[in-house]
Amino acid sequence: MSIAAAYRDIRRFLIAVLAVAGLGLAAQAAIAAAPDTGAPAAATQTEAAAADTATGADQAAGEGDAAADSEGGYEHLGPEWIKGQPTAFEDNALKSMSFQDQYTDDGQFALGMNNYILAPVIVFISAFVFFLLLVVVVRYRRREGREPSRTTHNTLIEVIWTLVPVLILVVIAVPSITLLARQYKTAPADAITIKATGYQWYWGYTYPDQGGFEVISNMLPKEEALSRGEPAQLAVDNRMVVPVGVPLRIQTFGADVIHSFSVPSLWFKVDAVPGRLNERVLTIQEPGIYYGQCSELCGARHGYMPIAIEAVPMDKWRQWVLSKGGTFEEGVEGGERADIQAPASATEGAPAAGGAPTAADDGGEAPSVPLDASDAADTAA
Ligand SMILES: [Cu+2]
Image (cartoon, rainbow, N blue to C red; front, side, top):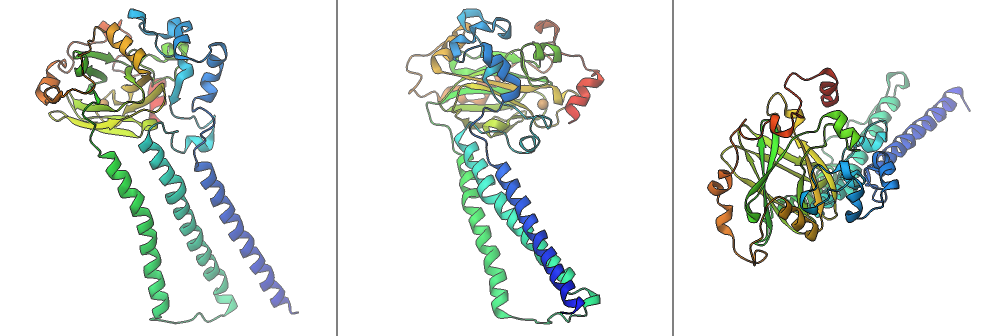
């Protein structure tokens, strides 16, 4: 056996090792991208809180100071109920780069499509192209002196490299269009309407079916959020409280500029546009707290108008509505309420931009406009 031949064998072995290592890494990435359904999203931050507070919505009463307001006997969910929030890189590097766990049917469908169709297709094609490139670079390098084939117009190869991509696109298109259609589904007639209005720079949640009261939601200062066991920059003074397991007709509206109502763990993002009422149906599967953020650059404090949704069982939600002075029409569940959906009446109760709800009304808790460096650094990420 000549030295050249041995050299060639070693080279082939090295290529094979590289290819296997590449495929292995790709497979690992695909597995890591799969949802970790066993553990709750908020593990590290809330485990301590959960340990001394037994789970169960009614037992949140122990979290006296965690409740922003408890009038009317309604106790807010404590931090052990946090389900939808981002993961820090330090806590779990892979999870911090992936999607949040999903708590709606659409979200689970979309996440499944990503994990079981898109990610494998991307990984396979990338690995395949990389492998071919590697073979060509090594095998036909000048020093070897091999003549590559100059084949042109090979019918079989051309048919293959046309049909295979078409098939791949069809495999992607079917669930993709299905997902699009699901996201455009209109809310059923008996859905509960909640209107989220974006203001510079906070959210207002109006409940037109329950008498039209509005809840103003401002971000909590960092220390206040952390003392309640909630994530800084995401915790708010008044959450958007909604019933779990029933369809909600979420309408969005911009009082001043375009905002965007976005909650990643609920697969929900709808722009809030001035002069226009957008809507999308939302059904949350489990009780819990789900955080989101304004996702349309809307001005200086765009990064300081988080969204916090508190999903609770229907009877608890009714209790909350009553505590806010809301009302329940008889027969509302099945009745026709088309008149309530009219944009004019829906916008009437909303305070003007910079109007009624100010920092002073909330006890001056809202941070003032010149941001301090630590806040800015947190949001820059
Ligand atoms: Cu905004």
